[in-house]
Length: 420
Ligand code: SF4
Image (cartoon, rainbow, N blue to C red; front, side, top):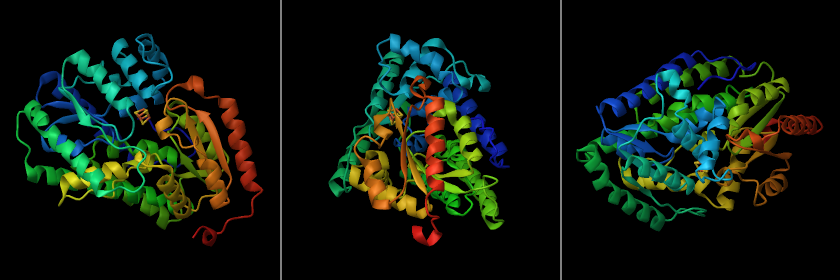
């Protein structure tokens, strides 16, 4: 993904990021065209470790959706999916991606690809939403290949042993199909290794995000949405871990030197909900101009999987998939948001109510009002969408965000101790 051009300080490690992302796309495309390795599509928080252990090259269509959104190609491709009966009200990643396939238009053309790579198998987990299953079933019908996955629990309060056991059984049931398509048996040591790499990647990514807890924040949400690429599409690989070690060292240097991502940081904001991919650059510029760092987000933290444990691969993968914020009920979500606000010394919270992703919009069941009450912080909800820019008004967002920052100016200054 291209870096947003803002007044945020550029990161030297971005050159390496571009290299590993490009190598990934070229590799999966070659495997798909030349049949040098089995190719699977996997949902972004699906059980990718099984695929890696079986030697699959893995493609993540939500990442493709984000690329379509960030390049604004999405707005030209979605219509083809709508015409096929996929409603404009459902996930605009899904409609952008299916439209991209139908029109043979993709920002992956920069890697020499004319479409997203064809898969031999599609593997989903509905822990995030049902849409991913419907999305994959479209391609299953197109390509006549297996579509398999985990039908997960949703709106979970406390994750119970019974939840974990049920998901483990589903994962075990997937294995024969994954093995048949890969043409090899699942090796326990390789699975442990791939879970160990995912865990290492997740831990490094968490540490990267934690550098924004410093004052000034070493990283903002907008850079985070770019830097998170490997945590999504290369989780379970050595390349992702190596990259995050490099990025972390660079950010820790910033913290040590007292340097922030922005030239000046007056206020610190938490962002809940999806990015507005086609407006990432504009929003980053707007916040930078207001000397306001968006220091943390639910979205970037979605690829932190605390529970992963290579000594207990399937149960820990199951637990990690269930403990995800998006799969939880209002109470654990509220506890999580309160914890994040304190950890990152936040002055205000912005909820993005994303029109076509109710699953990742948390402003619809009273959460902003409850947080305002429990934290005593200003809270703003802005309307928009991840990819469908018809749902986003530049003028309204700018007016609301500027008004919100003015409101922060009127607040008593919050000392770090006040957030402890
Ligand atoms: S979580 Fe939202 S954005 Fe992601 S695939 Fe599901 S509906 Fe789409």
